[in-house]
Image (cartoon, rainbow, N blue to C red; front, side):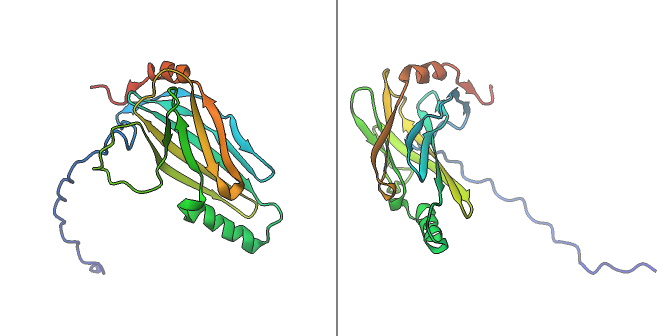
Length: 195
């Protein structure tokens, strides 16, 4: 004898409506349809007994440059409570985290604004935006990373990436960035899906 199923058949769900399409303005993010030209890096921006902050891969796009920065923070002699409180400060409070800026070849400075600006805000440029950040760790070490979008593509010459992180006593650490290498990598940009 065949038993009836405990579960009744599911109702047919209607097809969901197509979402409204929108794109972020160019000052807010790299083009989503490009594969960037890459400039490997990894130089240390700052190092002390507790923190190492380094530059990561630089990505050249047709209209701008994405920088990545990475930090490793180790626990020294903090109690477990102090370590947990400092971890929550690193991850939970933007004003305690690092500030980033770029000095352009003409000497002008562009700072990453830590205020939220709506996507429909207009910018004449240049602009530096912290695109995303993340991290994780454990009882002895945490790692963090940031992606910074510089728009528009900078003029020829050397740039400098600057970092301030007062919680770690960094008032201004910087590293030069080879603008010519960025321009060469820009020539390697590919369309993600050639039409």
